[in-house]
Image (cartoon, rainbow, N blue to C red; front, side, top):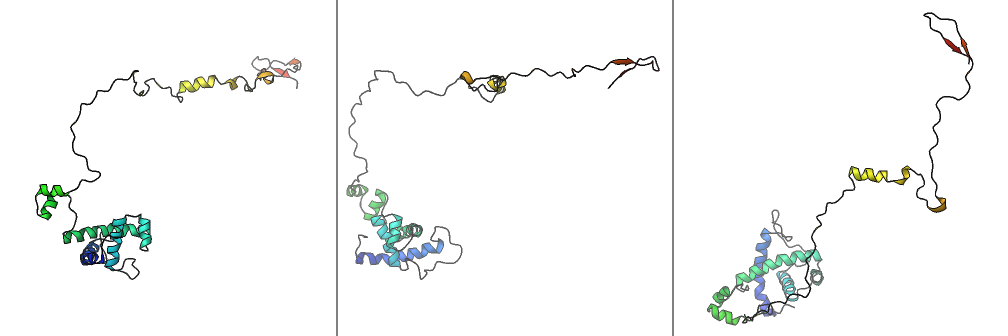
Length: 230
């Protein structure tokens, strides 16, 4: 599961454990800086020995499973497997750099490590599947023929003014056009349609005949008073 034999695996354990202790002295397992107590391996730790931690990260790099599957293989949950993976990747890189076996990232570093010229190192490198092919002579690119029918671009936003339905003039016009102001049952159609007409005004004075008026004697000041029988 790691592509390494036992004889190849054992020399990696001491530098890997030394890099692990250096890393955990400054950082916690969740990636935050360590500010309180120092790191100690608990008895119920799922990866208690250096060999377990090295096997854990080598299996992950070789098979690259889901974090859920990786955690199930070593008795961890997905969240804890995520923390261990990110912590041990940094530790393994530091251990490989200490041994001088870290992969190089440029031809210059590769040539310097092998002690050869850069051209000789470039000849040793095999092109990968995703590398761009060698440049080929470019042929004349034919000019595209215009289409038979003219192509129109997408229409832009309309420049016509929009009528806001909340304006006072629109609301007043809509209120005047409401048929319920003149007819209480304008929603009916056909023979069942009807219209409510307003009733005539009711006179404010009574239409009963008044009693006969009797003249009274002249009062003080010459004003004539009239008394009404009730």
